[in-house]
Length: 112
Image (spheres, rainbow, N blue to C red):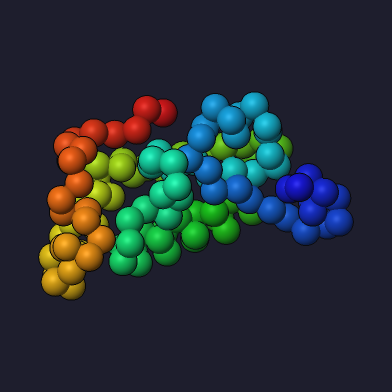
């Protein structure tokens, strides 16, 4: 679909958490976020990180050097989780989303 949109003259960029699939598909431009599947923009309420990912993706529209470039955002899932837990605590909502009670150790990162 991305290529069809590009053929119409509209530049596109993918935000992906599956680097291997993205490298195989070779979209015109992509931003890889090393997070768990389904968490393309990090954790709930982490507006700063969500904004950063969106801005990085928009930046790729002009900075991708060649078709198929996959840019990796320098952040880890463990870092995003820790920051998300801190944000939840500040909001007083640790039980509503469950980040603070997740079983996965904070130091676990998704493979790249």
